[in-house]
Image 1 (cartoon, helix red, strand yellow):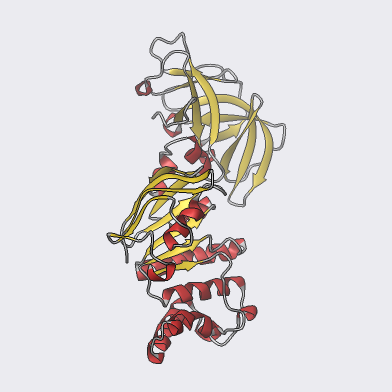
Image 2 (image 1 turned 60 degrees about the horizontal axis):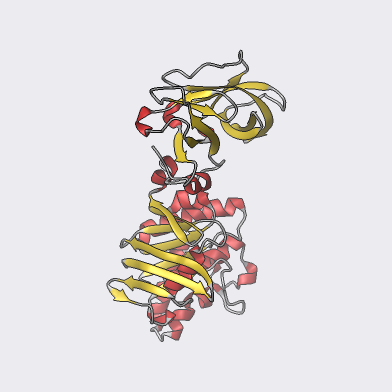
Length: 370
């Protein structure tokens, strides 16, 4: 197991800066997930740790040793790729043992290593098969086994589940989590799938445009996103955003006026100025949806925020509930309604935004205010 420090690391390709002064400390035995949209720099950072990309500036340190100039084979790291990268002419056993045979390990040690790995991964009955005779999930387990037998300081996972269907991804997520719990090896996992990030990570590193936007536990990023990017990226369906401004005629500065007219109470501790623009966020599962009632025009009460009447735009049944798309003024938002939803497009419904579930962000810089 290894402690990994990334110190002010930058990466540029000619005049294009891909990573901008990234700082990250990974504790021994920790499972870190780098998450973000395509092109944010997460895979580039992983490849720099592996030694597959050069560092433009800054240092990568493993257990106190700077490794910038070490060849990949000398870093004692094992990488699991999206494409499996198995040798098609070799059996499962041959693929798993290849790196050990290159290092001239004794046959009994190789047999013991691949035997234990195959048992852990459920591959014992498949050891004489070749990759073409395996399913996608089985191939990915072989790639994992090949990494395990090396007994590396750390595992590097480069979107390993992207080629699998939804059911297999779910199964493999569970297997990877169990494997980490069993081995306790430091792991860095790259994905653009925020569900993978939430379910696997000890800590998530949310990245965008070559910078780290927030580092924290899955609960940290979900409950208290640092900015609009994190708020919109983490969570499915994504957080709703409403543009608003402080009511200028309210001396206590405790009311916001939404873009379409209704008001909502806000904590006075926000310290917002009269007329100040703000973006209000609320997750779909926190919106309370009900059948239409007489239109509400007053300011919300102490325990909740009445956003008044909305019009149903679309209903997506999910089995255990439904995602209700609704329009407030001209903007479409989403609510997750637990249970059956019999509404249809054009129906009028009431929507309530509980005050304690609201997130507030600056309209200019997007930073969290509360």
